[in-house]
Image (cartoon, rainbow, N blue to C red; front, side, top):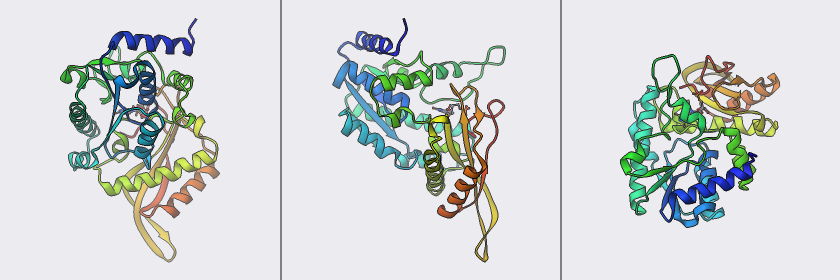
Length: 319
Ligand code: XMP
């Protein structure tokens, strides 16, 4: 008889059996997966757990503060907040290729994480929120050439280098099951229902090179879009919704003058596991309202488009 309550008990017992009295370091990203891992582990092994939040500066508006407040202040989970945005932006300067962005971010992420782990005295175990789809998407298509589809930076690399053993309590679960587990563990609904967010963050939502200015612009657009989605009561019907900053300037009119500003794309999809997805059929009046608000409130954007590509043939992210 498979219930999430039973899974929780088994997972806790398995973690205790695996780690004994060893220390575990958990990388926290603010997403559902790593949050569920952290709370599950804290329940299993208490303060043998130490969380490290590598803040790459590629998060959305207010996200870093939310992570710190929730885990440090609310859950009392030992947490190191490593603000490394400067380092990441420097490493990403001039990088435009999507896979190169991922590799750059992944490698630096590991570096920063490793340094922080050493500072807190190291640990025998590393906890990760790897899910079942991460496991299979990192392998290969059957019948085709053996290719890694996208180098998810939460899979592989680090543990070997640091001689740490992996603790991956969510390895058998799909995203919707992780949410059920999160509810079972009593995590705040806001967090449990949060849309997935990619490890490389906003870097893969800015085609072309990444600058602080572009990141700030995208954060503002994204915040307005998500605010309208929440107000319309649509957030929980959608798997992921986000804005993409396009590397295109277009002509517009404002008052008596012409503008020559950037364009953005909005994306929203439904999905059950991220492997396939359909674009979300927003009512046109909703789209019109969002576009008007973005152009009014975000200086530097004068055109808004809506992406109606499903997966396949598109991917969910633009890069
Ligand atoms: P795609 O764009 O491949 O995305 O359809 C499928 C799901 O994976 C997320 N995604 C990533 N997650 N590192 C991550 O941790 C990545 O490099 C990455 N690329 C895509 C994407 O947001 C979606 O949920």
